[in-house]
Length: 365
Image (cartoon, rainbow, N blue to C red; front, side, top):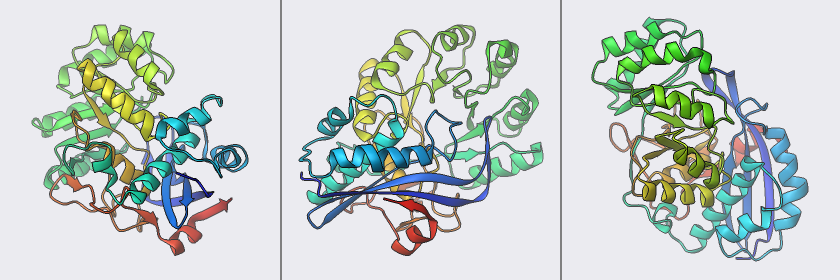
């Protein structure tokens, strides 16, 4: 596939409500979109490392500059026949997985569009029907938290994730478990804790949580392994899983019993598929996370979530949940309570609305 042109866009999308986690409070999501063109066909990719380097060392403005000034000249004019070829082309550049992912996901969308096939089908998806979960950012009161969980129950979502930070407290989670004893529930710590908090995790261990997501430092495996030995509740790693190699090390050291796969965090769909295949072969359950992207990025996540062996509802959000108006079209909607159907359109099935893209763009190149 000859890549005739690469265009990159740094956009900022205002959120409906603040998104509070252990590391930040976001009122808008900065994200990078890449458009690849081959002949008259275009493919779109997206990665959202956020405006400043708090989730990971990357940030949106840096990713934009790297793609525009370094990666784009290397890729435009090249004949790239596979995701593996693209990864090899970028392999000499260390890290910068989100910048690479924006290009990689655009390549996959373009490849599927050229073949006139849905991306989910092209990568071997088992079924277009994807279970999606409810995610609740940190709330200031138990009443507000309970209201959000009740909305998730009423909406038919099969599981709920609570963002959890040091000032959330054991009692907040325990109150949710008391009120919703049968809800599949887990907490996401976003690397906000240390082994000094082990007594808190021992208390949380008695609440029947599905998992505790990324409790400790984002670069750590050893201390996660030590914490897992103290708990019955499975630990799930997110921020720590940056490559197939790290995923293998996390499993082999006992640092994780679940793996959260995000195509942005691992450098693209190519690497995400490799991690998913490894997890299936190793008997380690995995599920698909997200970075609050527009439906361009979520469309890739949706395709990824159709693969066999995905064992937990994905972090994919229907239209209206995050943004008053999504950047991309058509709207991503629930096909049934707690489920979204991957589209049968060629590619991942979503593209930016031109007028909305212009309105949200900070810079383009």
